[in-house]
Length: 113
Image (cartoon, rainbow, N blue to C red):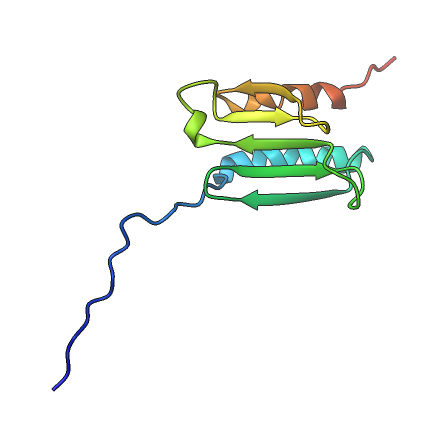
């Protein structure tokens, strides 16, 4: 009658890297406070096969002021988290997200009389 052809079994499908809920909550908390301070106005996220990137913009038409990258392949080396500046310079790299976000936290602090 007819021949049954099996579906090809993929050898390995590329997994997408993403942010966990607690990580994204921490990042969006800082983003919200920067928006309230009038520093940032827009953001973008890129969830790829090798990295997840959160980019924060002063204006939507510019390049991002800061990028927060999560690269699980670097977990056992330099740390999977990186804070990258506007010019592409790595400002902070580490194994834990709060330590990498510390320069942004300090930027929000103001001296009170």
